[in-house]
Image (cartoon, rainbow, N blue to C red; front, top):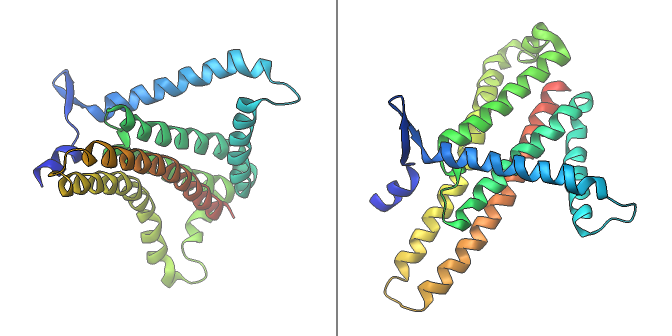
Length: 229
């Protein structure tokens, strides 16, 4: 259990004014910096060279943008805000998880990072719900079709950031535990542990990176659409 705890709890990277700054903050900021640099390079040097007959990279970029734009259309007039948001959060989750392949600690492996992402989505869900129906209309939503369902709807709404947080965190935690079990089961062998666990570690990381990014984007869009219908 101690080896699991060492993986789950982020270590302190440094202190500033007596406040501990964890590895999750450092690698989370590093992930954001990577995405900003990549986006700037693409915007300045690549997009101006896009052609009518697209190349491979242009096809990938246009497909990604089109995918998230299409996903956000269910939110109606708020799609112009939701599209970029879910694209950005999905990119952060995906790239942040893929950091594990380099031996760095993925920021998504910290429940606090997952909670921060979920709370941002929760804020937008209610913000757009209020913008669509007004504060009074948003309150009335919880008590339709009967006042008796009000407490249940409020409880369900409050559980949204909790469920989104633990879904993200649980995915990374389950992958870590699975790999620890594989290493423990094969620790008596010599050749297999060098190849077999490494192969499955890459597979699990890629699977979690893309699937969890997609699921988070879908859930955010679905909840916003529900709040603005």
